[in-house]
Image 1: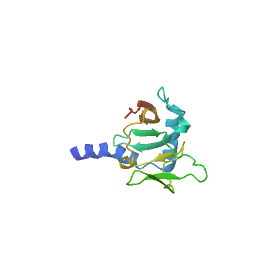
Image 2: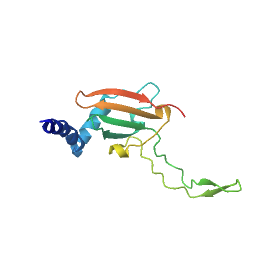
Image 3: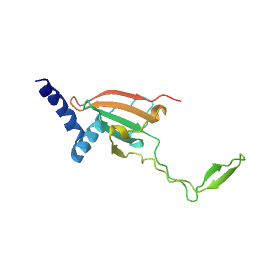
Image 4: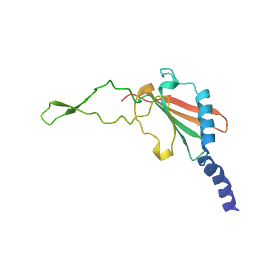
Length: 141
């Protein structure tokens, strides 16, 4: 009897982690149309967004405004040399996401950012109630 109760508790959680691509898009759309960003936030389209299902079935969302920027033609980076001088070098590829990109990730792949003010926002969304439970800007380092 106890085993049956445990299985009943696990089924909804496992099922929520196995969302189809269509269900993920529907959830992201619902969240994006529901969310009211905190005071001091930028417009939604300026954030790359990362969505992940938590074990309790709620959706953790991270909004990150530190997105890929276009570099002017011929742009070079500077490398600090051991003698304190700078050397112009080819810049590494910019692997940051584009603004307004949306990514569905595993909880272990969620970006881990500790500061950023309202350039980084954490949100918790409950798909069962279709409500935002928490939303807040990060602190400043």
